[in-house]
Amino acid sequence: MRAQLLDGRTTSKTMLDSVAVGAAEFLRTRGRAPVLATILVGDDPASHTYVRMKVNRCKQVGITSRRIDLTESTSTGDLVRVITELSSDPDVDGILLQHPVPPGVDERAAFEAINPAKDVDGVTRASFAAMAFSADGFSSATPGGIIALLDAYEIPLAGSRAVVVGRSAILGKPVGMLLLERDATVTFCHSKTGDLENHIREADIVVAAAGVPDLIKGDWIKLGAVVVDAGYVDNRGDVEFESAAARSAWITPVPGGVGPMTIATLLAQTLAAAEKRTIVK
Ligand code: NAP
Image (tube, rainbow, N blue to C red):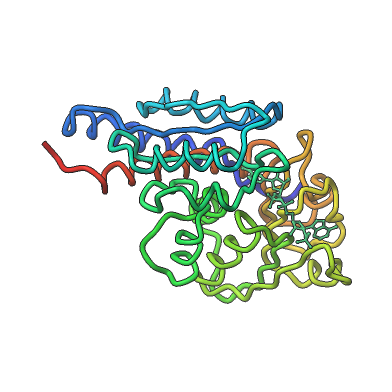
């Protein structure tokens, strides 16, 4: 392997240490810890694992989590009601609805019930628009975490050719917008893109966010490129790791790259939301 690792575990630990300092100061000055409400709907084992990891991290850094688990048969109306209550609850600073929700629930309607001031996972249309217009607001947590990881390793973005594989509203599109904001020239690829290989061959920065294991072959990677693999299915990423690491300059491991940065960004934004919403006593 010639690539150096973009190590999300180490970088996220630095971020979380700083969140812990901020959360302790928040407790001292406001008389309570920041509060993150997590909502999990249904029985998806991976979603249970993600929520458990987020709740554990909250505990480690001094953020109180309020965990709400709802059954698979929860209706859109009931979910929206729960989120609307949390949105107006003065004791809740941030709200995370674990994605995906069961089929039959209107995920967009549920996301839109989140008060943008508490949208610490960056999933509402208001947060999306804030990212697009470079306005005040919260980043989608995974895209924000990816940019923070690239910044931690001082990867130059301005003027680079970035190819994002995936165009979901919570990952592909917003990470492309954030790269554009940093003056990269951005191409989006998706399931209807006919010549994925040729796009990847031209890319200085590849952000893989498709959820298709080994979709991107290592020998497509341009020599010296930067590879960020956000894909995560059964412990596997979207990029063939060994062969891509032999050609790239920097690469994220899977796991241990993007995942830990997502959680750290979520908690940093929870602290920021709490600080914005409250006054020092
Ligand atoms: P999603 O909503 O299913 O979107 C997947 C995207 O990939 C779609 O835009 C789809 O194109 C595109 N795609 C699918 N097959 C493709 C192919 N063969 N060639 C090119 N593009 C293809 O998924 P998501 O929520 O964005 O998540 C994507 C991946 O990131 C998943 O593996 C997920 O587990 C992972 N993820 C990781 C984290 C983390 O913290 N590490 C957080 C969130 C998500 P169309 O639009 O044309 O369908």
